[in-house]
Length: 95
Image 1 (cartoon, one colour):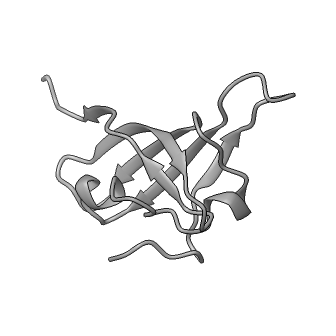
Image 2 (cartoon, one colour; image 1 turned 180 degrees about the vertical axis):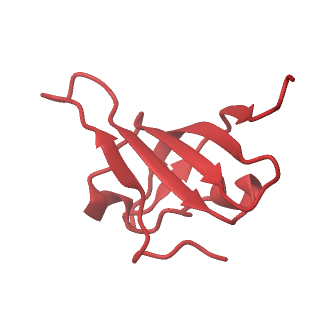
């Protein structure tokens, strides 16, 4: 499933006075490799994303559910964002 502007990332917190990154969450069934493609978040500027913001992507159909923290590495001329490789976190049961 491709990115849809009707299901955009949610803003978790924003920076005050451009002093640091905002944090966003995005959930979907796309592979992390697809989310990291150039311009995946096609309406980033309209949402208020900027270079350096953090995006927590959760792949909801993975077993176990996998989350990856990425950074907005670039804002493109067309208003889309490029997301960097980041830290992958996978839920495990240590019982």
